[in-house]
Image (cartoon, rainbow, N blue to C red; front, side, top):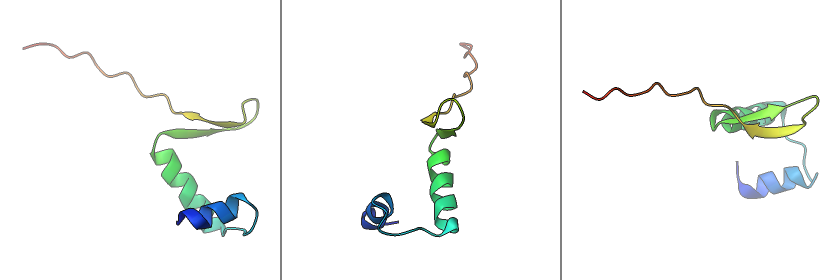
Length: 57
């Protein structure tokens, strides 16, 4: 998706297709962002699972 296409979308100059919205959401989520709903509208970084402690050899 080009920057110009995204700007047109943000400025309500165009309405993206459902497949485009879905793909953009997938890419953002794959980058570690979680879309929130309800009491906390917006986005936040997903919590990463704790890494196991490394034991020295």
